[in-house]
Image (cartoon, rainbow, N blue to C red; front, side):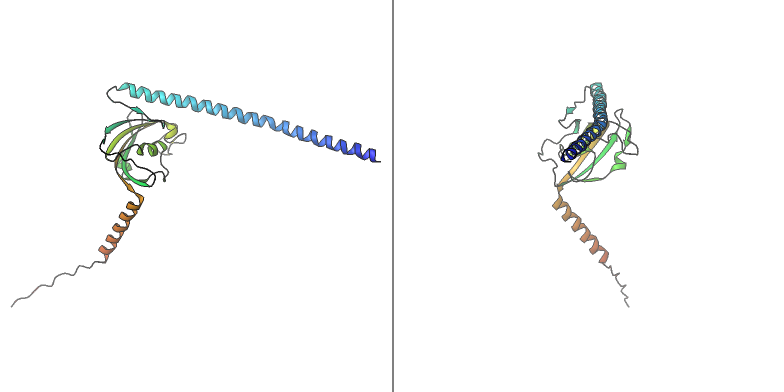
Length: 213
């Protein structure tokens, strides 16, 4: 009787192992397919980046009078107006005040400066275009810079669902007017609000006409 129980137990264990093995093997193609998809996706992105960088390089070579610098962050830039006197640049905890214009690489305006102004940006605390976020931290106040951004640090695959298309590299002209600390910015807002409140409470009493005999 014990012998029969042992045989039955061994049979059940063998059946369970076989079932698990078959289940694992049936899942294997999904894993392999996922790996193939990721590999193909990486290859597509690599080709896309190379194509966009080729377009940017062609633009740079088309005008030898303009000297573009390559950034370690993956974009190119050139100064229209440079401030060599100041050493400070915006950092996290600052508020930057700037204007900018967006064009395609052929120079066609997508968004004009008038459409986008004014810009008030809390550095590294607001969700803006990656290239623009990095580019602003490079600038000194009162500088004007032209940036060339590949799509992966611009609006990427989705664009902006308005005027910027899929995988579109961009040319952005940025003018950084000033930047101050968040504490100073909050103080300015408070003072402005207080002044406006006082102005609304001020009652101007008209002078009475004086009557002379």
